[in-house]
Length: 218
Image (cartoon, rainbow, N blue to C red; front, side):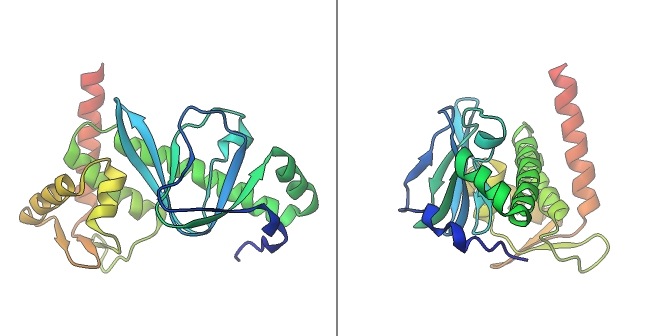
């Protein structure tokens, strides 16, 4: 069931394309629920700004400012004209006390967002770029945003640009890797979807690269 937050319309804010909603490391006192538009979440990793998420309407971000009172762990940038509901600690407490059902749904969203952020960060910790691309498909498969025509085949309604964002690399580099996978008959690339022929093959591939990376780290 969708969240009915019309009563909180007075907390609505609109940002224009390319507006910065907040920056990594700055103090955080608010969190946001997207009503329309998309928001890009970026993070500095090894002195390079990398995209770690693209958020859509209905998603929450910036919640750690409320839950932990911590500085921003990433930056948020409007990809389109974006309308959000902006909550601070004070009006969030009002929401918690006056609308427990809505508050519970928001807390579940928080829990999912924290898991998703950790999972996406795991992708970026892989040094092997091919493994990062493969791990994006594992992440999408885990979240259920996928069709499964057969026991091993997975069909993802996603684009090369989206995969590149999640893998923290340029679209050109991502396409080169995907073309390499296609030559290996691991994937098929279409205009509106990407098919992974054997998801277990990618699971083994990413696991081996993660083990190798951990061994080198030690």
